[in-house]
Image (cartoon, rainbow over all chains, first blue to last red; front, top):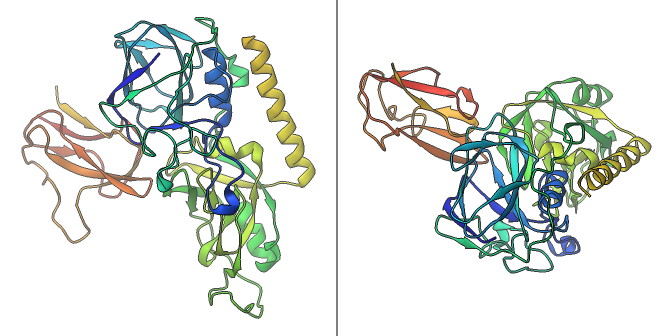
Length: 323
Length: 78
């Protein structure tokens, strides 16, 4: 079910579950910022759950279907319009060639996933169709979609028109959003008071938030424990001798504004990290709008692993519900 | 009924192209279709907000540098 792009939206990209295995070369995994929404949208239209779909942020695109099939929109909440008529989210919607999908103003969340029968079939790069725009890799010529693009799709599978993901299995951030953080290697660099404030303060999503990382502001600046600067580190107390940055790691340049690295993360650098957002909460970050209130909640390794298992169980329940 | 200009995006709204510059549109001015009335900053970039309708006597409903949500009312026109 190929698509013609009438309006591209703000920054709409082809995404699948990403290209793990190249981070040591500086190429991030990439892939959907909200992986559950990608899996669910694919299952709804009868695709393998790792098929490629479109991810739109804050502003939906306008797309014309060039053949009949199914479309599903998951993730953020906004009016979904087919030839101007509102359609339900998280549901397999039958469409005909020539019909136009468009969107109203965002109500909550930040990113939608638009999956179509057969999945997006742009050329894969390093094993994935995910668009990594900074590296001009994947997607449509390594970039966000543009007006006039015709986006190819694969062989349709067997989706059920009208199938829907039960509401209890959908997930979005609350207000304040709660992100669980496992304190990490450099946690002891900040004072016990600073450790307390990090979890006690309310933070807000800064405008500098994208697929590479989300910046937060509004909490108290961090005090550092006095220590001798390690050889090779910069002069700021938040500098380390360059190290690896995991996905979800929380770096705090200058001890002021935490940055959580996301799917298009840089692989390393010279800022200390207070910890890492647990994998189960990474999808929530993908649904945060600027200025939204956020709290960091202290996690343990056991808690993080239990939360990961819980997220896997939810995906399994969605598979069952749509089987 | 007043004509409305709404923000297409969530972010921070600016009435001026830079802190030292004059506003894109002064209060009470007339605007034509396609006129830039402000900027919304989100994801490290600034996006122009253009009037999709023409009108007179523009009245801004929010302040410079206010946080806005998608669909937030920015200004009314007569």
